[in-house]
Length: 271
Ligand SMILES: [Zn+2]
Ligand SMILES: [Zn+2]
View (cartoon, rainbow, N blue to C red):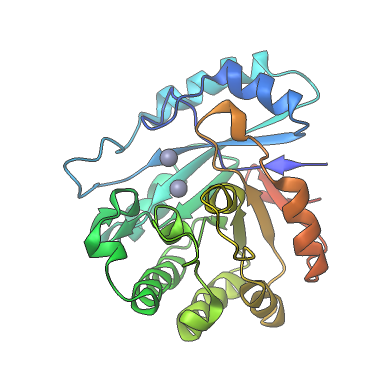
């Protein structure tokens, strides 16, 4: 059983290059049993250069009716959404998450100092690593505290994804207080921590020798009582669906993770 619950299509996410047909055929050929589509919804995006904003949720629901018909019986298709968090949009996210029959609601923090980490640059990567990670995870903690109507907190290591230094991966010891606040919010609300396999894949492709995710992050999450972990490849193209799942599953099991989850009609399913 393999469930990859964080992915994008070109039909509703402007930064994705994958059609629904490609997503379905690649999911099947790459051995997935469950695939989640979680299109970007960046409510009130502050960045004028960023074309990722919002999409028409009614059209998305309609498209899904056709997509479910084309999906073969051996693949389960989940209708999800990925909200980009900002402090002032917490209430809107909670409200919009209830506006359609989503299977899964993912929250992300794509911004650092008001710009998508994607743009990187000196302002993000020129500063001290610990300070950067402290600010980023502090915002993840705030996101999970302020929002209530969600299932999964995505890619806590997104801040690393565009780092030109592949060795500078986020560690628990960089900001233990912020990680504890983040985990406390997730655990008390019975939400799920995503392990993003494309973050790992990208860092390794850049030649990183760091073991990812940091074992101390996972051990701390489990020690605090964290039980729920999902896997997402965050694919925007067909070639990365389920990427590095078997290695990541083996690695997480070696740290004491016994099961993973996905969501159907906002109910958790364990696998
Ligand atoms: Zn994206
Ligand atoms: Zn994301």
